[in-house]
Image (cartoon, rainbow, N blue to C red; front, side):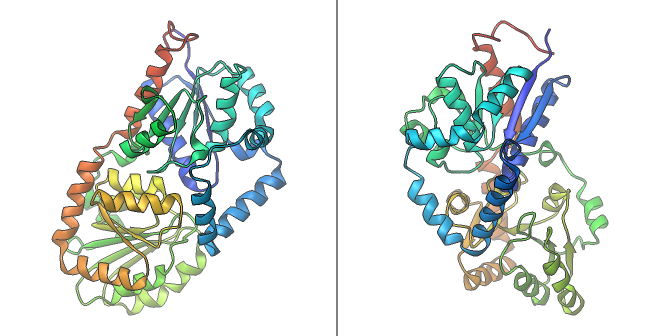
Length: 385
């Protein structure tokens, strides 16, 4: 038997692409512990200065002028890439990708970032690349930038994305509805009493989790915490500030003066534990954050989703009945009051989350990827350790 070799491409433009890639790697290693897997960041193939500028501009747009991003997203969402655009993308790393692949000789390639997927898919069409390319779409919607006839298989979140791909001419048998891959730690049963004790929470109070991503970009996070800290209805809050030191320090007074407990945390690596002991999460609508919450059957309040893919993710959550969307602070306050007074509404959303996302998305995604090898003209007759 041969050793399985897999190349995984992601990008650090938002943490979700990286987390999805890491989840896929986890899943492959469960099936093939001896597999050799290399995980590469698309940015590593760019000029360092160009990569830094692109990341900075993207993060600043998302933080300060999200409506601009939304306009760009929706304007280009249904427009197929023209040859000139494809040619430009190819220039970004085409030759470097091909050289690296030829040296490593993977059995298949996984992409969780659309630009990389497009470059490799074009190489597949031109028959310069003989290795199957699997693209993992990391949202509950699909932008045209993800779509390319050279992709061998798509891993998608839901049937709506599958139908959208089919409407663009992607054959149904190439699209696998497994759910967005999430780390296997979100599938494990947790000792909730132990986690409650470790965090210093009270077991008899409802727990609301406030998260805004690794950089703490959730708007109005301080006011949300103050609302929960001062609530006349007993509740406790956990807020993850990420790398936002200013937010972390600003909560000191609220924690000291509030009638209800507030636990503040900086960057954490135990989100699965926090979700396990929470009754509700107030957060942004990144595809991975939504998937992780739904995997834990945790209802969501999505606050001011960024126009574009996050807005579409928020609509999905609302459509399946697993959460609500607050467009402004007034709506958010109404929702908080509603769920504090009517905990049974939270339980209804929890049941809907369990129905909508049965779990084991990573396991199913990896099984679909390995099944692709069986039909490969190069590797179909081989077996792997």
